[in-house]
Structures are given as C-alpha cells and as structure tokens.
Length: 70
Image 1 (cartoon, rainbow, N blue to C red):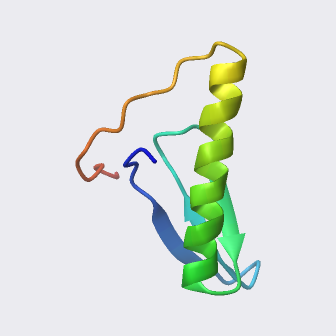
Image 2: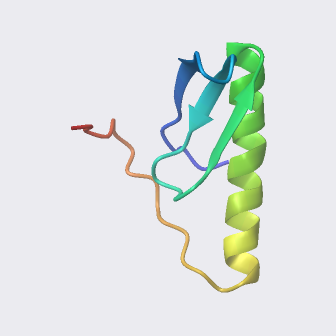
C-alpha cells in the first residue's frame, strides 16, 4: 500500500469518524470508530488506485511528508 496521508476527524453532522485522503481526489471513507474509519480509508485508497490504473489515469506519488493545510 502506498503511504498517503490520511486525515481522520469526527463529523458531528453525520455522527461518524470521517477519513479523507487529500492526495487522492475525492477519496474518503467513514466509520463508527477511529479504527473502522482508518480500515475503510485503506480499502477506499486501494479501490481508488485500482480504478485509476484500470482507466489509465495517473496515480499521484505520495508526498512522503505532512501536507500543509490553510
């Protein structure tokens, strides 16, 4: 599995933990626990990468460092 940054936060609106992968556009997952959100994010990342490869779309290399957020 590639080493992409995963940001996990609690969504009060949805009542779940949300895991986002900023380097993979639109890649996110959720879960009732922090651990489940992380596990679901890892699965979503794999599916995102496999789908991009299937369609010949570029897969960005992980930056290997913390992203800066504004």
